[in-house]
Length: 182
Image 1 (tube, rainbow, N blue to C red):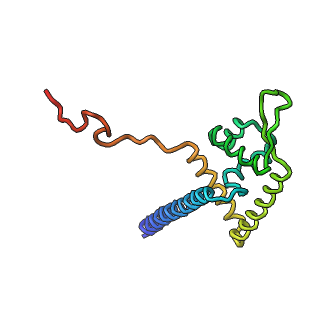
Image 2: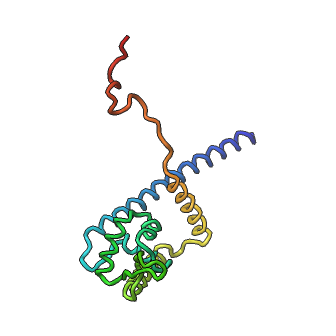
């Protein structure tokens, strides 16, 4: 009788794990979609407002100091052209300044202004309040487990999806729909 009981528990645990993985995947998709909507709302900002992506650039400058646009683009995983546009806006708003590098006069470095630093501090404070409120009552063990899960997901996403083989005739192939001729 013990063997069937163990098999039943193992089956229930496997089903429970599958359900937990399904639920985690759905929650992750919800977060991902919400982040996309957050970025979408960025296109409707007023003249003096900064986007989430621009805020991320300000954070990079705050944490790493002044950087050339190319290094900032690499750190933010954006194209140099996109970062240059974003820096133009941030400079117009007074959040960053562009200065020649002291070590190489050919290089232009962007760095935070005092106004930019105040902007970061205000946004960080607002986000921290929301973060703390959203996670109120969650046990530290659960937070550590969530951290490990998110770190694994980040690695998975960084590695990219596996290459998928195309099934059936290749799309766009001129001979794909033609029968073989002898």
